[in-house]
Image 1 (cartoon, rainbow, N blue to C red):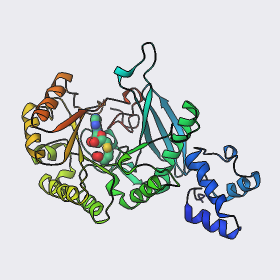
Image 2: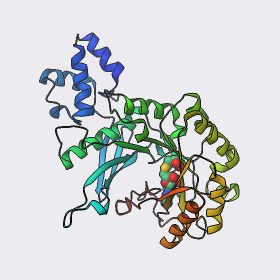
Image 3: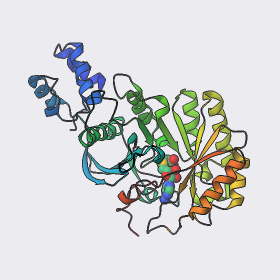
Length: 365
Ligand code: SAH
């Protein structure tokens, strides 16, 4: 039997009641995990030895184990193993200060750390350009498995970058559900994990610092509206018309583009949140000027920002990456049409942890 995790509030509180543990002790336990970034009992020195020994019998700090880690200059990729032996991945991204602020001869200063987490083991969506899709879906991740990815990363950050007095300095401040899986097909656990991310006594992330990314699960977006879930929403659009979307994303058959856009409009009306549209740049397929113009038409008058993602190649997939000049031209057409756009950094490639590359080794062409 797997032990419950140490951040399972109701179980820890139940145990505290049984053992007449004072409420501040419970607070201290959460403080060790969430603020001190400790994930082993030895490190939790603000708790007495006896208490640690007691807790250890019944609770595990995390519900996943680190299996392998690849450290690259701009990212660290973690492969975690679940209790039932599956591998899931999470990517830490180090955003550094803009070059114009760089002190000559020195490395650009770190100013933001984002963690990309997985919500499922594999994925059932089978988008043609994505490696994770080739794995198929094994199972949903639990709330605790999603939170464990963040706690592990926070501990790693503390070890690697040191810890300043102010604990907020070096910790994950942004979480994106852009790892393996489709978060809106694991709705309940994802929402529960977001509660832990936002809670003041837990991870205390800002609402605008948590991003759900979906390939366009209309029913899930509708649920976000009904449940008044107010975090950032990214939509993997990748094509401005139904024909092309159908060809590269099988989910477009179940949730056609016009239906998707209508639901997004209701979401924007309900939340007043800008939508981040992800748009993949595949040579000769999604990157033509005509498609850029079509995208302008589609998004005109909508509260939108477009992230252009250069296609990350994999030997088992036949697509090619767009030329850099093509990407910048595409961007300028969007901007001339009044749509703001950014070109996503191709972070994580050297760790095989770039968008759509999770599961790289498992799917070798
Ligand atoms: N299922 C969710 C979460 C995954 S996010 C979603 O689709 O939004 C991962 C992002 O990387 C998605 O936008 C996905 O479409 C994109 N992606 C997949 N394969 C890619 C590749 N080979 N190169 C670049 N981006 C890719």
